[in-house]
Image 1 (cartoon, helix red, strand yellow):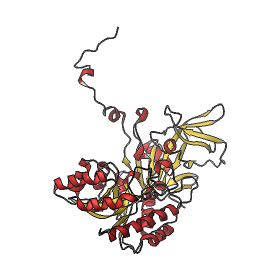
Image 2 (cartoon, rainbow, N blue to C red):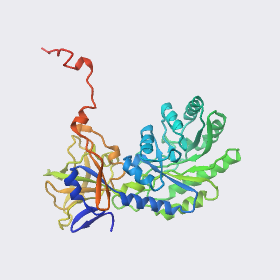
Image 3 (cartoon, helix red, strand yellow):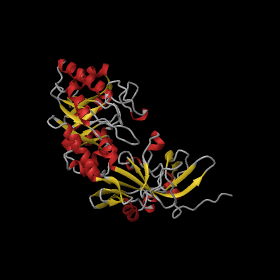
Image 4 (cartoon, rainbow, N blue to C red):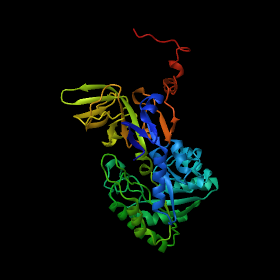
Length: 429
């Protein structure tokens, strides 16, 4: 039994029928299982039991504060890539000393806020960033603890838009220049070099790329130590994949064995930044069928969830398992395209998906929607942001309400010259 399973032909999240959530909250709606998030975190922690290692949840995967809080209560820190994510982590109860700030484009204002907050470390990705951080730290009278993110030129063998460790990617400092960057860090005021960081991509389903990257990091650590730098922390990033539509995710024990084999003799404190692997499979997107349309060559199931609500299929050609919330007992029938109401051909949840017969009003569940779902949603086509729900046992709570049309419209402001209450309208003749 999983946290999303059928009972009496009705799909449940833990002990809550998804039909109950849809009736109470409406659709589309994201639904997360708290116990699934907790179980995945504990499995990750158990894989590194006895090691000097910390887990820093990658907030960009799902930044809902209820999700962050769930993980923080288990001991997780946070990996953030913006001041907004940093503020979310703090608001959710993550202690500042358990927060790592990553990303290639931190502004000076973000650096200043991070230093004032006294977070654990800042992962720096360019010499220009080192210089900017030094200036900010010196002006604030603080010392920034810095890890240099390396670019190991390792192909993660994942989607090109989520691979981050090849030489042509924007992330990290090329291996050939890390030595000079470390010397620069040591020479600049307000900085203290404490470690190295690496992250080669997301949704990895094989372990060989990790082994290659970690081996290069170990060699570089030894080189920098020989040059007099005190490298005591290694941030190994995240990237472990999940099962979306038949993939086989890496085994955590095998992953831990590669870490120990590659860098276990260095005596460094380790940091891991899992995101998708903690929350991805813990969420579903519920959507209701509006129409079923037979086109010239294809069957279209038009649903009320669209690419603005869930962009992964349109952006990454991602494949997700999609199933009826109420199992009619009918076998999967002809292929159907599951599409949304957005005025874009790319607005789709699935193409050529074998699907049992469905009718208007039926509910579907999109699996694997706990990561990079709601967090990447938008109001394109002036569609309000959809709600998020967290389930625990027999209960559920709305953890982000559905955006109202008034809230959506009130985000805009008219300039004085367009305000009809103060300016006459010019008529075009």
